Each structure stands twice: as structure tokens, then as C-alpha cells.
Image 1 (cartoon, rainbow, N blue to C red):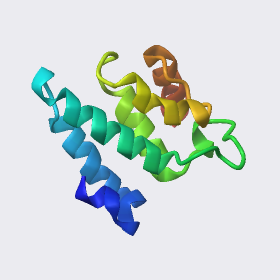
Image 2 (cartoon, rainbow, N blue to C red):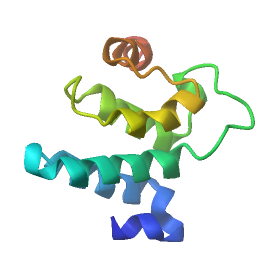
Image 3 (cartoon, rainbow, N blue to C red):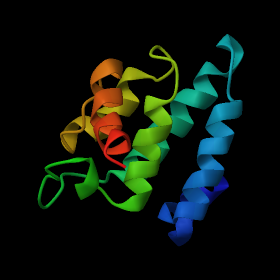
Image 4 (tube, rainbow, N blue to C red):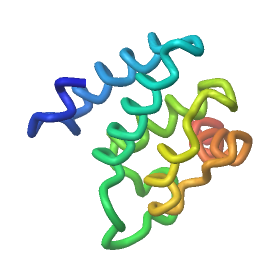
Length: 110
């Protein structure tokens, strides 16, 4: 998470590194680490209120799309609820099946 404190924090490469770290945070004993990392990452990638709410998955930046795809690929109960607040502000679905459909509609159209 040291990357999260740098200006490069929202580059695709840095986000990939943070997602890899999140994937390694498993088990009950790592819940606090996962909670902090997810909340910090979501806040960086989905900052504040969007100037214009994206109308679709394609309207998100490449970095935002990567984070949303990563979350959609995880187990439904794997994310701290308050970390998802950043997604809600951007009108990205947060229910697991809704999120998968949101991403899947793009993947199915490829």
C-alpha cells in the first residue's frame, strides 16, 4: 500500500500491484488489511463525486474498469461494505450479481 501514497497510485501498473496485494489478503486474520487496502484503493480510483456519472462500464477509465472487473471476479462476501461506498457514489452496481452483469455485458459483447 506504499504505492497508494504516491502520485503514481492510480496508474494501471500501480493498481495491478495493489490488486495483487489484495488477492493475497485472505483469511479472517487478514480482514483488517483487506478492509484498509480496499477502502484506500477504491477511494483513489473512484475519488469524490464524479463530475459526470458514467452511463456504462465503458464510460469508466481503464483503471476503474480493471478494479471493477477484479471485484466482480471475487467471491460475493469478500469485500468490506464501506469500501464499496466509493463505487456507489459513481453509480457502479455493488451487488455481486449486478456487478457481474455490469461487467459481463461488456465481456459478452467482445
